[in-house]
Length: 272
Image (cartoon, rainbow, N blue to C red; front, side, top):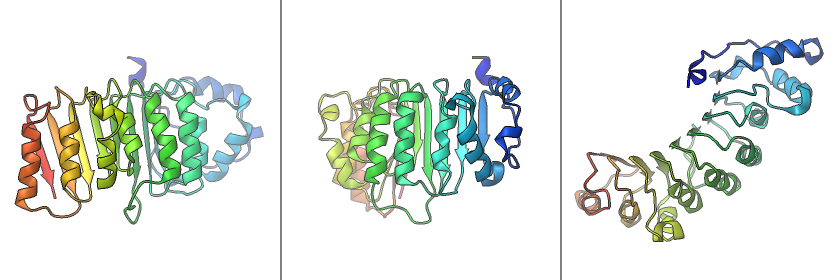
């Protein structure tokens, strides 16, 4: 829509610490015009400013009520808790990037987003941690799975958060999801293909581009690729942390050749 193409309003809030000194009616007037908010550096907004805005924003409502796109890139541990005040029902693109996500604050964030921000069409969740986690975080995962279930308009999901079978199942049932990036451990892939969503034959049915990242290629990744029921899947990217021998790769190619999307598949990329 024309509104979603509006240029983002750039505002410096770095030195704002006194909420009583702010002309709130004027702030709200301009806040209603903001369609995109891009937070790309930690020092874009100070923690003190976030605290002041959180405590004193009028009526406790969203700061930018007509926001369409939010990009939150912040690596400070204590800032995730402030993100909910930027969420609004009008958001269609939500990008969250950090090197650290506090589990409790992040779970609370997804719980809030499920009720406040459920019309998202593009979702990106990236955690550039110093060390790659060995599995999903159970605190974050439970809330994220519920959020995924609520995103019936989601068309694109990108993320390097390790997902459980529960999250994969939720994504696999979404009716409009066309592009999906999955980071999943082998045991969770096995569990995912045993879920009701997979067994009913509607697993990732609308997907056109699938990226699968798992530590090692094997029976679980091969079975998952075979379980995808899309008839329009055109591109598959398979990424593994550990090397795979030629026979393993050949078995995966055979699974793709026999899959429900064998006639629509145009490109396969394997990175190992």
